[in-house]
Amino acid sequence: MDTAVRLQVLELIARALAEDVGSGDITSEWIIPPDLRLRGDLLVKQVGVIAGLEVAALVFATVDPSIQFTALVNDGDRVNRGTVVARVVGPARSILTAERTALNFLQRMSGIATDTRRFVDAVAGTRAVILDTRKTCPGLRLLDKWAVRLGGAQNHRTGLYDMVLIKDNHIAAAGGITQAVRKVRERIPKGILVEVEVKSLAELDEALALGVDRIMLDNMSLDDIREAVRRAQGRVKLEVSGGVTLSTVTKIAATGVDYISVGALTHSPQALDISLELYPQGA
Image (cartoon, rainbow, N blue to C red):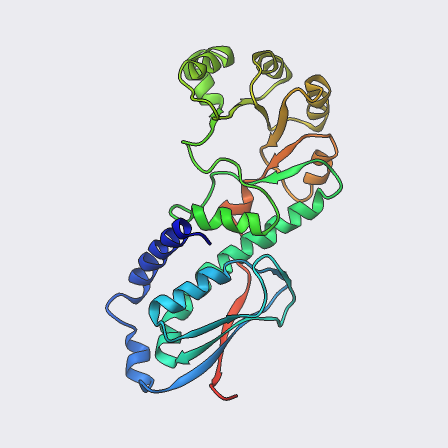
């Protein structure tokens, strides 16, 4: 990770450790001798895609720089049940203090990457690219979107500041799609993309006439999506959004759309089951 991202991740880790550790890990301090050293294996208990090893390593290093963290696979790798993805060696107290925070980051990111890879695999062989959304855990957008990339998909806009997305409420407030786009074009700097959400083929025709960069087809039927692709004729990128599931995404991709955004990747991921198994250091 680059320096800017590393600093952001370290801030997240600091907040997470402050929340969990507080004034100290009293259980470990009162039970475990200060000089006891152990080895810990990070063990995956289900098939998935691993993501967040770099973050987990920083958690252990933040708690105790003397902990040795060794990744045994790469972020983005598919892993099987029983795979040891990383190993830590160091003071037992420190390892146990860092354990939960490291696993929380690692399990969430791996769950997102695993779900993402399923969607990416489901559209393989089509032109469709899977995108995430802004439906991320508050404060964890950086990590959630990183996990999506590790799962093989691409990121939609990062926030409200890096792309214009004119949605139904903007359209209602402006008095229509054309009015909303005109207002944006009065102020938009060069390099900022403009996307418009449409809910009908009539709205699609209006948006096509405006020459925007991308059009989002919101909760449209497969027949309407196919017709939208026919009408667009490649003049503008088309994105499908709304209620996309693994059972529907392949059929949506087959219509010829360019992008499919899936909010479920980050708003309700299933954490990957990973545990820390401890052993004597020499074992």
